[in-house]
Length: 180
Image (cartoon, rainbow, N blue to C red):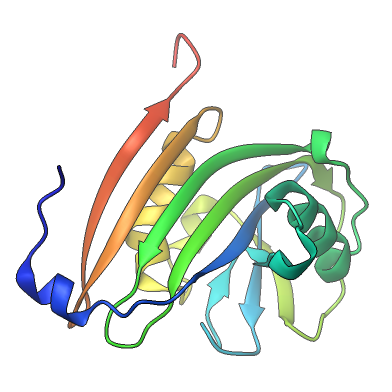
């Protein structure tokens, strides 16, 4: 049984998960494609593209990823062009939503930067260049390290927002191909 702290239990609000996909796209030089967001959450910050599942339509995470990839970048893909790298369950507090996020690496490579989109502006970055970018703190501290580590494998993690900018992270399952 998981142990929890009393403040966590008191601050958690009963609400349904928001379910989303994050798409980790690369060019032929293995630079990552990021989107500087025009809207909240994460206004002005760099993050992978992606979006919310159409749960009322019964959309699967894979179908959502294919749809969001086309809508935001213009790239056509099939579910076979995706690798599910991770699942993150983020439990919100203090009125923040709970999120269930499916992290996909897009196997197809981009040849050029996608055009500006209403959601924001795209650019490619090396891992070293990413260190200079403004991005959500939990992405930088937790999600990106997990993505890089398990890029060719899989992980499932949970994040509990404890309030006051503190988080509790736990990898609940993970695997890497033999030899990695």
